[in-house]
Image 1 (tube, rainbow, N blue to C red):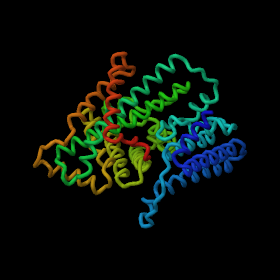
Image 2: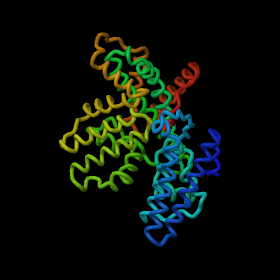
Image 3: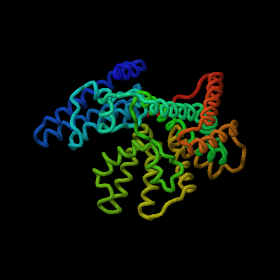
Length: 403
């Protein structure tokens, strides 16, 4: 029933995308079965490589064709969540190859692992040894599941609707015309976008975890108060943790990690963050964003120094400009305004509401489980925000749906 619901959920958006999901699932399942049955290392490696090439090949065609061959002007529909379920299926095949898990012989359970609807389109990226046993086990939904799941749903919808969608119009107005933005507006835009994307993405994760919890399934935590980090390295241990751990286990450590000296560690770090940037999007701005984070972490490694909470927040916020700007040229234009845009101190319209939303975020993030009074206040604000968004013509799609 869950598999049928998950496939219906995904196929209803775009049948072709659903076909690709099922095809990726089938190929990775068959390759892993072959790895489990193969006797020699050569056959195991060949089947694992086939799964990797197939999955990453599909990802390259549908996500990176415009970046790799812009002259072709290919207009290919990007399947929602393809980056997430591709990495999830790859982790399964690689773990089978490494002998960490046994191949799942029941196609239905494996297909549900890849396409479980709460986390299918934007994660968290689950590992097979954590999620598959839960899907196979008999589940009994408890009062704790209902209470905790409901609290997560409330937090998630509050973050998205009352906070992220309140901040979004201010951010959009600043990034829409970088040549006219003042330096103050650019600074505010960078900080507010960092808060917007956090509320948007962690809000989705809360909704995904809450939905799964109502079904008796526990998903991985993806965020741990990242803006309280004292270094960029620590920020990435707290931000999109399922992606960070995936790159650590399947790219960074196989490259040698930190075992081969500081220079090799820096090279490995830069490779990982370049790939992380490109994973987020097929644009040079994303690549530069990843390389900036890689460079900042490399400086921390070489200098053995930390930027502190304020310094880390400032560095991460400025780096978001590369991520949010429509292209690399406009990102550089925004940075130029930080130098030459001090002729005006005018603030963008709607800034008061955005700042109130930012303040509410920091108050919310200190409480994992809202008290009854806080829950009532969140529900009331959520309802009013939803009505306001409906009156304005609707809200914004989740940012990470495009990845």
